[in-house]
Image (cartoon, rainbow, N blue to C red; front, side, top):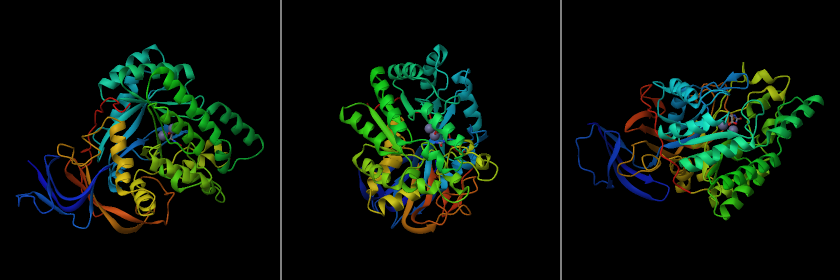
Length: 464
Ligand code: URP
Ligand code: ZN
Ligand code: ZN
């Protein structure tokens, strides 16, 4: 029986802040004592958390490890990506398994299990991307849910790759509603976007900034509106992934005001980066090509407001890294060929603590809510994950809210040759990261064992 005590820290959950000693036995939180009231032991490991915060580990509900996309594959696999996640205080990821067109969900799920098994540093779960909604697919959704894959993503974007039409979306939504599953939607109307892309290229507009100029926010607002309407017709909850812009947010706000089970996440890149980054000289803008695109800087404040008012419930990363050399440079002559996606699984907590909590935009409790508690609740991981409570998994972060460090590709652990935040000084970092009670990162060093992260079967959607 492994026994660990985290002593003298300030526990922060989505709702409470209090001083306590947290006792862990066999990977679970066994007891929470008043500060200094824990029994003397014996403890196998004692962690001195005085002057630090004890947070539930981050949950990143949107990652793409080892994902074939844009003529290449995202550069982190489950080993490197979850190790980087752990360094940044994230102890669970929900990655997207993919149904290849014409193939069964079973095959896609098996492929993702094979990618992850024995490799992960922290726990992981899967959503299932539907690319081909037919009778077989609809029938198979039940099995996914039974196996703990309780959410399905579909795309209104990327024609010819991932896009599914409204009929397919509607069928999958109806089934999800019956099964208590959640539909995640990439809501951008990819058909007119593709026309704008072809027109831009025909005019010789090939630079990275045209990625943003050909994907206006109205395309996202229309997709968001349509996704919400289809979900309402189908009687299903819907979760808008990587929401980037005010007009899409308005659609979510109206839906929620009407009492609909509509939820949305945004990502750090939409809170901290902008279209100006895409317009950097030469080909540097390629680092910032992700979809939906980065928006004009003045749109960021709306997203922060949405986070404060709970119209946006989650900040995940959409971690989908591609190296500049050998991957992003596929698009040197055409922005349309730049693989879409950015690294972020390691930097999310840093950016949100520094630019959110310390900047006075959100409270510490809201930080915990949007990075851990809300994704746990929405994606069926709560109360095992997402809080500090007796009986919960001891996925915990001892967080030094005052530790300064500079973000750099040279010191971060993601397997990619840049960070979009190069040179940015941030304050706040973990001293200890625990996955199911075991310390996996201590003072910046990985002390865990590859493969200790487990697949987590998630519960059905329960928040509607
Ligand atoms: O640019 C992005 N977001 N790449 C990953 C695929 C997706 O749309 O989520
Ligand atoms: Zn997407
Ligand atoms: Zn994504």
